[in-house]
Length: 283
Length: 355
Ligand SMILES: Nc1ncnc2c1ncn2[C@@H]1O[C@H](COP(=O)(O)OP(=O)(O)OP(=O)(O)O)[C@@H](O)[C@H]1O
Ligand SMILES: [Mg+2]
Image (cartoon, rainbow over all chains, first blue to last red; front, side, top):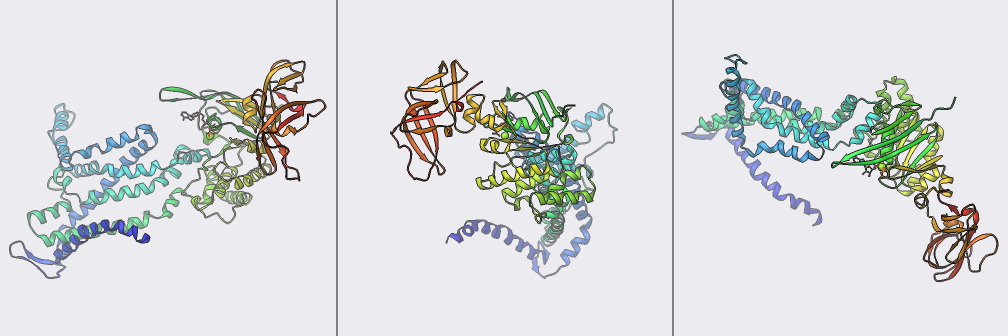
């Protein structure tokens, strides 16, 4: 009985996963192999053409999503690491306050926040409108409806998910260990490169996972900030499902995206997630 | 030409501002540590030992005063440019590196040729008896092994001085004693200056050439172990180092009257506080003769401690005196609780504080 207790305690969790993850996935997998239309109904035909069609028609958007997601992740890493570092090592007793400030935007709905960026970046909005009025920017300058706007939006929206895991990893670095490196003739830069950075890599690893996946699949930023020429795969899935009611195609697209992301994560984990890499980084 | 001291502190003060208040962790320490010396900083928790050591290592800048290494002023030199290495209380090993990389770290930072790194790391691992464990990670090792890695990591650089901040604090008694002997052996072998922080007085007494006893950010006494033990400079030192009996009163004609007894006080008149070590006192049922200090008392407690027995004896007037008596072959105690006894000791074993 004692030995069973942990399993029993985990049971609700497993049930939750079974019901809300496995069942919908199975249903979606089945839909993705059906053919038909919303009016006459769909029938199971085990056709993989949904997948091949989806891939050939929307490969541009798929590649674009991966590129935007990747660019946003990189931007988050470059912005987020220094912030996490600063809070962890210079935050003093205000650390919790800084973390709270970081999460403050989350008290406002995600979509609303993104729309506000739309206002802010509008061609004749408060920012650019004013600057153009003063003649500081050319009249045809615009940010909205560019790749830059989408990537910036993605970066903004998921930045805390990059910062938090890196912060947690840095917070656990014993300051004495850094001092030991300096005591052993390492300059500040060398101590960072050979001790702090390698010890924070698990946080970087987690941060990249937590941001790359949702950023790549996100439809909102592309829709609100990207205009018509920056459509991402999330937008395609959304319209295919909600507007065009082509459930099989939408399901096939979702699965394709999931497969691509899973393979990417798997390769990434194999390459970066091992102890050997962490050790090599310290050399 | 006088030989240069390995380390010199001149009026070193360290102030911290915490919660808007200035705290003096070190209030003015001046000391010289000679080349090759085993020097201990001893004192109770919070007296400023670590802070003093961190200023020598360069992690803290003194608020006032000068730190010199080999006669050179290094007060504002960062730690990576100082020729001293530190062994941290918590070891502070690099958790992501194996033993070899931990030990080789300093040599690599100083761009030592590969061949030499190999040779020196191999040598030092042999000295600390860790050959064959090169590929282990710190967390896969016992406390004693980690301690030796930390020691090797510092020693391999052949610094002019090694700073050790309570390096044995985390070890159990048995391992601690083994490591004390080990440390002493290594120090003799490599012949470099050791600055050793501890709050364990027996550790300081057995290992050091000289000891600085610290209290509240100041050095209370700086002397060799024997002198610190036999001739403590203050009641604080007397109480901190081992067990000590304090007897106060007014000396008159070479004699101090305490609890109905006569304590011989050479070379002192007037107000005086004497210390007498418990093992110097003899207990007897009869009043002893001869030129010795003699005081009557009543045994209030008897504690058997293996090699010796500890007696608490209360004098008339309330002063408590602790006496250690070696346990002889017959298994009987010299006195039992409630016995009226005489305490006696040689005149030279009374030491007047502050003389
Ligand atoms: N960064 C700091 N800020 C404020 N006060 C400090 C700081 N570091 C040390 N102190 C204070 O300075 C005093 C001396 O500290 P230190 O660490 O040198 O003591 P220690 O003798 O090493 O004690 P222990 O035996 O407990 O290690 C303590 O009262 C401590 O609270
Ligand atoms: Mg300390």
